[in-house]
Image: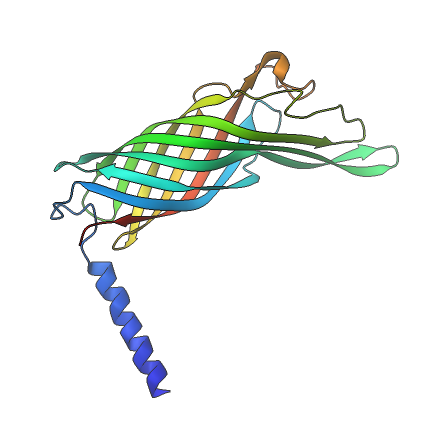
Length: 222
């Protein structure tokens, strides 16, 4: 028991020291470039398909490089693998009872975000910018009693997408950050006759709409 108490006390001291340690973006840190890794989850939907709700989870992860001059502003460039799309499970009444309608879209992108950051005193900093997304694969399926043939091959998505991003990063301990972002398509991901019949709200366009929660670890030279 004495060993357990000693280990617990040592762990508590370590956490306190890390919480008070100098962070990468503190004004006294003279380093200008920081590289790091990010990993987390996207919660996505597609606007324009007639459904709503951030029901589609997906992985997002990759690398990031920060440039922080000696000012309140900085920049970052990332390279991520990002999963987007939508997921819908809806009950539908039929002559033989209730059926479940299912619709899935899985979109896998390589993403290059370019963000500008506002560094304020404290643990929070704020971000805004754009991202170029390149579609590397897609899957689409529908399950319904009157389902039409549907697939990403029959109704293809655009190969490229530009999106806008706003977000924040909170320093948890030293070089570890919790990041939240909201992302929305600036260009349509699918339009016109490429949208399956019955999956168009009348706008003639579809857009990715997602929220992201991730962890980011930055490496400095100390």
